[in-house]
Each structure stands twice: as structure tokens, then as C-alpha cells.
Amino acid sequence: MKFSCDKELLLKSIETVSKAILPNNPVDILKGMKIEVTDKIKLTGSDGNMSIESIFDANIEECGTLIVDSRIFYDIIRNIPDGKVKLYTTDNNEMKIVCENTLFNILYLSSDGYPEISKVEDGDFIRIYSKNFKDIIKNTLFAVSDDESKPIFTGICFEINKSNLKAIAIDRTRLALRNQIIPETNISDLKFVVPGKVLSEISKILKDDSTIVDIKVDDSCVMFIYDSFTITSRLLQGEFLDYRKLVPPQANIHAKINVDNFRGMIERASIIINYDDPKIPVILKLKNSEITVECISKMGNFCEKTEVDKYGDDLRIGVNSKLILNALKCIEHEYANFEFTNMRGPFVIKPLEGDSYLYMVLPMELKNKN
Image (tube, rainbow, N blue to C red; front, side, top):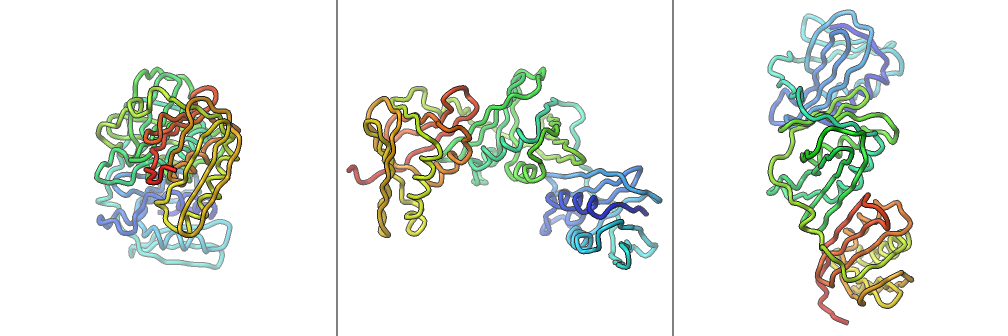
């Protein structure tokens, strides 16, 4: 193997591919990074469930394939001088890395035994802008469950119907849903669940621009093709809850609330909670044309009110400040519609118009009825 390329190009590829490599992987060969040199350079990292490949051009003199320790390889390339870097192997299982007057020799392993990366050859095909996909992940990932005993809920469920992509995340206390228009497909009813950990890494790779992300999916696997990278993951298997059955069909109380103002009120109430006990609820009181946010703890009390457009009965309800803040931080509109059934039922946050998002939060029990 023998090739040379720009250091920054190589470093970017190593950084991205390394996201799929677990240093404590029980399979020793998967602790390393695979380097394949043909007419291009391909770097591969995998943890057995997710893999990331990066393909880029270089000045290639000799082809070959090998495995290197991903951590030392990254540290070396990160710290060598900027400019052209040359990599080549010797007969004694060493790879030399040369940049200006800097020389490293590191041992490499044979690629024999490195598992074949699953590919989606035949399956459904979807396209979406990088910015839109990044936003979808950011605005639903926080609601993914961390309960490994029910793995299906540790991922985000995607539903595709023609030109609509729907992303849903559910845990024991909340639901997050985002709708996104995508280029027209011939898909009428497709549902698949991608692990949240995989989507978290993908969101770090994506840029806030109009670069296309191609998504290919079959019954067991999904591929995300973006720029020079291909991320492949196994799908989570099982029955994902139908969110439509979880959302209250009819609300008794509606309130049009300024999102920024309300978020600020909850954040200020959280100061008291953060210095005491996260289990302490924030109390919301809807009465007449006002909403009051209260917090009562051993450390102190908080109270603030603001005007809202409300119709329906008055209400007093307890909420977890973190759960509602996570949802409010995802809403870019100035106002949102808050829908309540009663003090014990879940409440829903929707846009004033359209169906671009839906957030649902379960309330906390209030012991004091005053």
C-alpha cells in the first residue's frame, strides 16, 4: 500500500469514521480502522451494528488493505504538520506515515476476518436535505427512551408516505413528532426504526445546508449516504407504538402561549429545582387570561405570570421542567397552542397552523391541591 493525500482531508475522514469504533469492543479486529486502497481511499469503522465508510481521492501508487489502531492513527494524523502526508507499508507489518520532517512507524494487522459491511442493495429510496434531516433528529432525539429492556423505543420511528416523512420518538413520559415534506416518492406505507445512538452520530456529521442525504432501507438495514460518507445501521425490530392512540382525541382547555416568554418562565423556575430536587414539579395555573408558573421547594419559592389567549376551564397541573423545556427549545414559532384535558391527563403542544410538530408530556402528580 502506498498513497499520499492532504492531511486535513485524511483527518476529517478519520474523525468521522472513528465515531463507529468502540475502543472496548469485545471483537478485537473491530477496535481498528480498515484502510482500503484501490482507485480511491476507503476508510471503514464498525461496532458490529453501525458502520461508517469514507471514500476520497488521493495520489495512489500501490493498492492494499489493512487494519490500524484507530486511536493512535487519529492522534498521529491530528498532530503532524499541515500539508501533504504520505503513507506506505513495509515488509515487516509496519506502516510509515511521513509529513515534512516527521516520521511515524506503526504496526498494522491483516484485514482477514474483518466482517463484511451490510449493504442495502434492493429497498426503498428516500432523499432529504441535510439541514432538514439534522433538524428532525435534533427535535425528536431527546424523547428517545434509554430503557434497554425495550430496545424498540431507544430509536426514532420513521414513517414515509409519498412526499411526507414523519419522525416519532416515545419514552415513558413524553412523545415528540416532526413532519417533513420530502421529494416525492412512490412509497405509500413504510415504517422503520433507527437506533437513537446512530442518529446522534449522524447529526454530528450533517451540515446545516442543502446537501442531499440519500436514505436506502430494507427489512433489516438502513444506509445514509451523505457527501463522501456512508453510514450503515441495523434497524430496531419490534412493534412501535401507534402514537395516534396515545394523543388525547379532544382537549378541554386550549391556550395560545408565547413560546420564548413561557420558556424563560420555566427556566427561571428550574433554578429553584436545580438546587433542590429534580422531582419537584413546576406548577402551571391557567385562570382567566393568565398563566402562572410556580415552584415551591425547601430552598425557596418562585412565581411568575403572563397573559395568554385561553378558552375552556381553569386548570392547575404539575409538569417536569426538563421535559417541557426540551420540547419548548425545539419550537421556532413565536406562539404555540397548548392543549390540556385535565390535571392528570397528558398535554399536547402544537403549532397554531399546520402539523409540522407535536409534543406531548405526561403531568406530575400534585399533592397539594391549593
